[in-house]
Length: 515
Image (cartoon, rainbow, N blue to C red; front, side):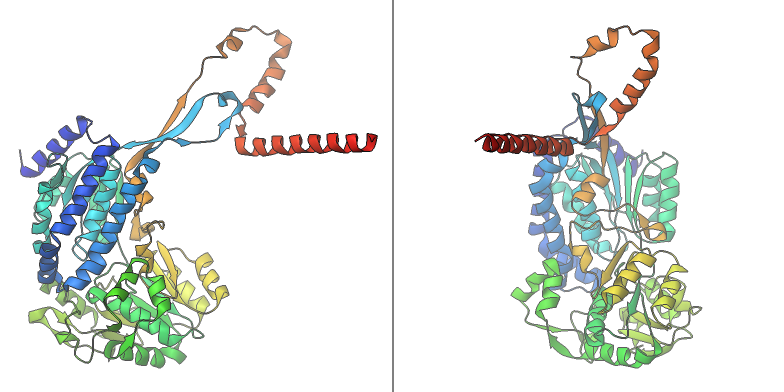
């Protein structure tokens, strides 16, 4: 038996003991996961520096803070999430107990990604633990140093219930041949199809957090300075290796030069973080505690500590090949030995160019010219549904039109990425950009079976023993229809209260008239 088979077998054996069902057990495991993050912060930061050239501050801000927030939310809300959920009844079941009971699925396989290897691997694990599942965690082998740190999870979590399997493609293929009760995969659409195909063999449900080309439309009447500042931040953070980063810009030709100039300024110039930006960043507001001056990448991004690197030379070559045949407006510098690509903007990019044929996943930002909002919407709708869609406009009408006439995993107006920080928003794609969602309660529900329960009361069983004359059959048929009609008890209570109030008012008026 292989190491991967043993891990799955041990996880299932542990799950079948039933010890993951009590809420106290789940909370204890979540607290231990939080302790792992706190005690291994230095190890995590060091690994992230080696894998992606991330600084300790960037690791804390974009990997640790959000994860800790998810754990805290799950611990505080777990009793509420796991409780039976009452539903509306009909007259036949009005005396019965009818509810939805969330229950664990079983053994969940979590396949992580390399671009944010801590948060996109452990956030699904938070949902799996909270829902009472066992889990097999497969960190990405591409971020190898971070994967090594993940192996330390066994020192903090129940080592039988929560297994960590490291390795490459071969190990992942062996895992995918095993039977799981749910598979949670984060990565590319190409591999996502293979995961879904493998899951189909066992009829295993999947959550696929994929990606795609997330468009960014800039309305000519918006504040272009603010738009370009936020696009620059969202695009070049983590060296463009963010699944919800703006993939390309759509704008009219009349503002293209201004857009390029403003992005150039944002890359090179220091500026103060404005209060509105902080307020829209959710957990990112914590940066005000230790940073009052935000600097992007200066005139030399290569020497700038907070500017990342491409994960490996294979991806470096892929990204550089995408720029062939396009006009560079900003940047374009690269160093293969360091996997360094400067923040780059391409102008007058055509829909048929190489850079528009696949998700870039790097610091290359193409600008495609469209003739207004209508043409931008048509351009977006002619392609696969994106994971995120960004629009910058001061017009509510323009924003609403973009919402109503397009489809995407998420839509964000006048900012980038920040929807990821809100636990009450489901995070996930649609169509080619993914299936299913997570974050907060959505993670819990995604990794639970919402079981329908009806407990029949037998107090009125004697009614069923009564015999009826033949001529009452039609009347009973209509009675049955009425009985099966759904009853909104809250509404009936309101009706009863109004009727009682009306009767009381009539009584008072009548007494008053008699006097």
